[in-house]
Length: 185
Image 1 (tube, rainbow, N blue to C red):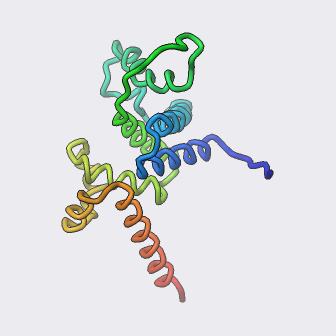
Image 2: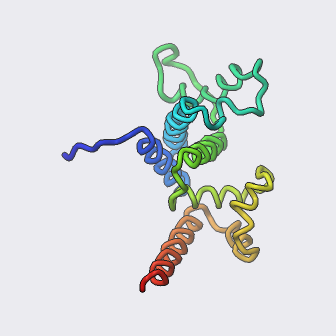
């Protein structure tokens, strides 16, 4: 076995991309959530240490006096899925939709740390934005929706997630190939 040197950002990118790939293929929601939350925690910690971006846990939307309670609730499922020392017989109700918020905020946090969206994160960002435009600010709409022609938007919304991902990656590879051909002397 080959030993790898992995930094924290690389670990977070790998965890997040794996969570997204599982999400696109309707994979196991508990695994997706755990991976997304692990990636978010790393990105949150690094951003916090650098004093840059407010992510999900310290988002300015929440009042300071409620932050501890909000964070407890945000971390509730993640902690449940990774620990059993205090409550080995416990049961929890889990709505996997919350995972999408961890993915979005982690992706944004990575961008603020200089990690531009790759093919996997880019596909999620665009798909999520197209399916949930009501959550996007004007800047978010300009970033994730406005570049997509209306005909493509309509077609996208009827595709299952895995088909969108396949279409997006084919398009991105074709576009990258075309751009590389144009750059040749």
